[in-house]
Image 1: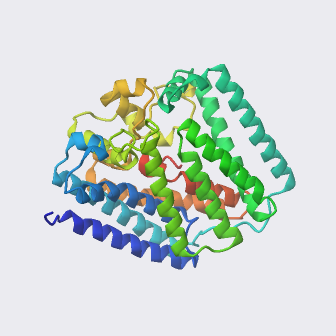
Image 2: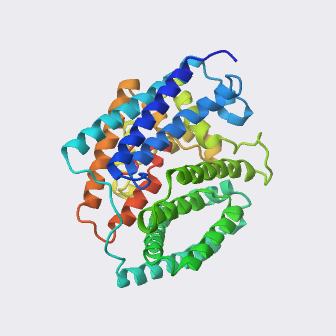
Image 3: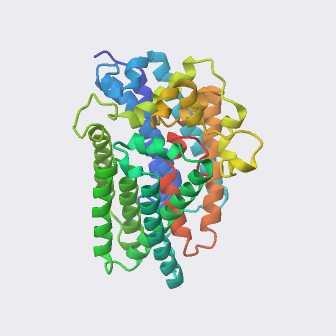
Amino acid sequence: MRFDYNLILVLLIWLLFYISYKYFYAKAKTFPINDVGFIWIFTLILYGTIPYMSWYLQGQKFSILNQRLFFLDPEVENIRYILYLVLACMIGFMVIHSFLSNYFAYFNLKESKKKTPQPILFLSILIFVSIIIFESIFSGLINLESASTRSESYAIMNALPTGFRQVFRFISIFKNFTTIVLTVYIFQTWPRFKSILIFYIIYLVYFTFISGGRANLLLFLFSTLICYHVIVEKIKTRNIILFGFGGLTGFVLFGIFRQNNILDMSQLGGFGEFSNIWANAFKVQKSNELMPFSVRFNDFFSYVPSQFLWFNKESPSIWFLKTFYPGYIEAGHGLGFGIFAEIMSGYGILEAFIRGGLIAFFMFLIMKAIARDNYWWSFPLNIFLVLNIFQSIRDTSFRFI
């Protein structure tokens, strides 16, 4: 295997990540597991370097393990350009984040001293149970259980009228947040309700194998790790790294397994979660398609119901599928989009630096608002943001706003 100079870039990226880790660790005085800035940097490194390491370790070429990257077969210069974007994003983010943290109070939210009020607890339980019942009835009404694959269930959901999809999305957000509220309460009263937590994890494991959706289980386990570390007892850094590596490995292997219920590396699921983000960027780079203005800035008005807008609202991931893979979206599949594809459709390395800085700026404002008075809902909101910040890399940069 010949030496690849891109490896120097990757090593530089990892070095800067280690420096960033020490920076966040010094601020938090413990492993910064609930620091949304650190988690964003970590996610950027995962999506930004795993495809490269796969390429390098496979003899400096992509194989069928990387699905679309194998067929796109990007040049070494294209790979290097992605790494430059990762580096520019990271530097832009850390420059603005460190500047704001030095001149203003640093907001690394501690667990709220106030326990979840009893009325809020009862209301959360009521909402959670009601949503579970609603989802069960709704799934039966639209015949969702008839779907034999996860993609078929997505196709059924996408075929629903816009209003129904909006309601379902709103309910999903409520369910996720109430789940976090209840999880925080379980750890605030630890170990009193430990058996309930174990039962729910077993239920999620079962549901994961039935539905094929791995994200809910992984994110819930991550939320329990955050709660235990912040509320109950500090977990050693070594153990957190082991948990993280185990979770990531399980995530990838299950992505392979769920295609045909066999562990077949040649299946589409494979390492697509990371490879697809690179492939999307290369596809945009090679094409002459211009992303419409309304699509490019969709993050800033995505919360506005489409019925109140005078133009067709469309996310970059939907635009990408309709433009390049129309048959794929009709079958209920998705490919994400990614921050690198966004930058490829814009102004390159300079935009990567600016985009990283803007993400740090908006993230700082949000955390300032959340942590200012440290109410009972501050810590659950902090966890909610941490769990969803990966979409800033996987989908669109400002989706967390």
